[in-house]
Length: 488
Length: 65
Image 1 (cartoon, rainbow over the protein chains, first blue to last red):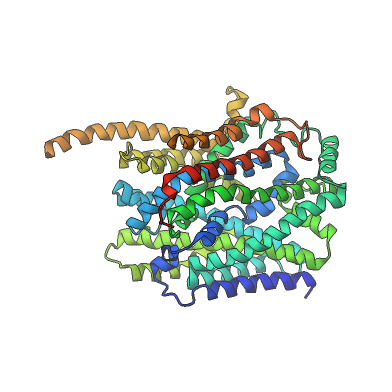
Image 2 (image 1 turned 135 degrees about the vertical axis):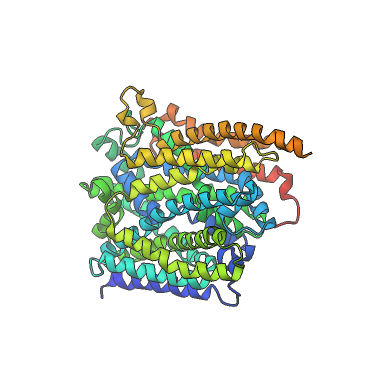
């Protein structure tokens, strides 16, 4: 067993231990398991809401994107910031409504606001469709990290299986309490590791940050600005907007709002989180440092940049520590995704079929579903292919389609009808699916101006969604009005 | 004081529209290429704006946590 493996194994054990201990002294009913009894204070809510920032996607993908593409990676910094601004105004009413109506999931929110079980089923299906690829991505990242940081001693397949077993085990026992406790360990480690790497590597290889950017500009002119075509300014702006709107539409992030003890906690987070996610800047520095030091990674291999450079620079034990951090960035979001998916299936699909099921039965079913969802994700991970990033972006485009009907439902008088909401979501999701699955994109339509070709397809789908929502809502409203007059 | 809430629009303008005007490497500010420096500066300003909105928001006065 080499020095690196000690740290990686320790991280896995730590996650398991914290995950199990988290349930101590609590009766794990559905409310405790899935929304922490709505009793989380500032620190846990902060960490759960911040959990989205430091997943394997940002750890590997953020540095990889800066390494492979340069400036387009900046979008990751921007969308989080804007999402937190929105969160100040949007999340407190969601939280209050969820508390007053004892909601467990995002789908519940739509069921209650639009008074429609069918809409809830639709939302749950969209959610699950988006969550599975996100979980696959975490497992795939985990496999990569353990294989490289462990110097090949553990195969990625073995790592994926062990990771899945660990995360499924502690989610079954502790639910969201397990996610909260393990995220304490994750965020402590990642803060230390990323800040250190982001400062040390530019100094070690270039003599400083300014010197590094000067060297990059000399070797790759224009690398630190957005290109004229492809991932251009138009791509950047539309992607920032789409992902900022979609940020809190992820069902596991949405449900983590429910765990808060009060609304003030959520508003206070909107001040701190923009600064907290600035740590991503150091992730970019690592990617930029790697771009001239370990050149030659292409395609999906750009995600390996951080570990390639670390292995070149440090002793195995330290690479192991970075690997251990990486393992936690996969397990914590993985645990929240698993729990949310299981809750959605049990609470919003099963319960619709069998309305007489009580909370105890739903909780039991949700816990039993955890290993099954994990198994499905492992299956897709090992079946693999490099379409996962495409699937993730598709997932983001999917969940963002929930945004219009959700925001409208927060207004005192909701303009959207349930038919309008459903039609809008279906139209938006269909647009994304057709464009993504057929491999077509706006670049194929040569007659469009290049600015339009570069737009993120999710934004286009969002516009379609909104238009359909308005038309169908107007139509169904007119039908509804005469009958309500008649009823009076 | 509710009009202070509208300050929240500024970060959107700065980060969604702003890049069109500052997509350049130079001048390098605090060792960062200009576009990146712009984004980082606006993240810090955003945090300050949200602190101002929080401080003036009557919803945060009560005892509710």
